[in-house]
Length: 112
Image (cartoon, rainbow, N blue to C red; front, side, top):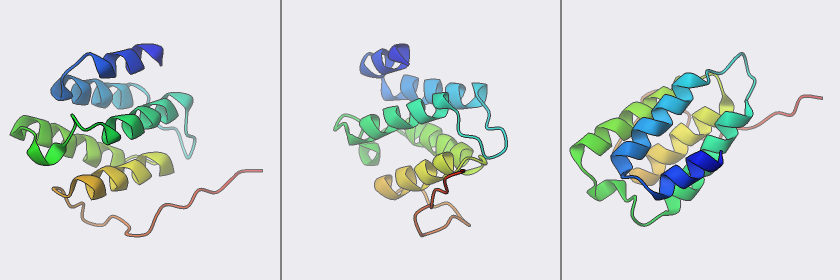
């Protein structure tokens, strides 16, 4: 986790996209379990999305393509957290529309 946080401050947006895609592919979701690695990556996404230097409207075509790939990858996961962040990232950047994605926020149900 600390490595990822450090990495986000010392790399380009292209490097970061590649790293995040690699992390999500390395830790697949099993059933409707959300593991700690995914939650940590989501926290990084929250911080990353609010950084002014990562404004996707003005970024390169390569970065847009990587972000598109990452959003589609998140949207295809079984995890409600991954789906939620696919929606958040696509909504906040306004350059990709995902067909078949819910408009309403994803509701989280707690298992007792």
